[in-house]
Length: 301
Image (cartoon, rainbow, N blue to C red; front, side, top):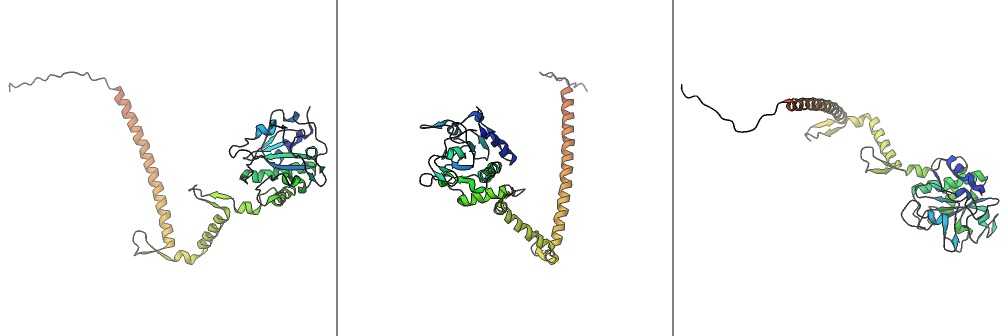
């Protein structure tokens, strides 16, 4: 039978997230769920490499715990995987206000995010996990307080999702941002976003540092007195050259070099055409017979 959580991929895609639907997921589950109220957050405690190496376990379970063991999986590249539209065995014994005791599987969507449990969250997961949870809660009409950690549901036996920066307060703050319509990254995310130099890709700096360099360069460019100051000539350090004159010289040399390069390219094309014509003519010449050549010299005069 088809279970009730078939809306999940659509809600996630509407939030701009990538979703993969595992074959048969609409009919997978330990019966149907009732009165879904929130989302329970887990980590897989799986291998340290691979995008979603725990997927087989999420679908089929493990000894003494048959699958599915979650409704959704979250890969390291931020892709969501629809695993089961029905009830999954993920919550176990626990309690949360408004849920009751030991019945989280009936009321909470279970999300298993790929992680070793040692805080190895990828940048894609740090963005996708709270964004996806917000999309699910938006569909349910619930607030960020219904994003519940497994370690909050079962505090004496579970640690997940472990190592999340800022722990669950930070996670729920991001969920709240998305629910309030702020789909943009946080200010800290923007300023610390790594950006590579356009001509030196190995030079990577955070956005705030590039902005600082740009501001300094702009102030210098606007300072007329700065351009009038002399600098030692590279050709002869004893000869001072105004910075403005040096810039004009560089611009002039750049234009000259571009012209020389264009002329060189034209000459290369002409040379290539000449060589091609010579090759055609050589190929058209008759074969010269090989062998001994006898010479007769007249010595009568």
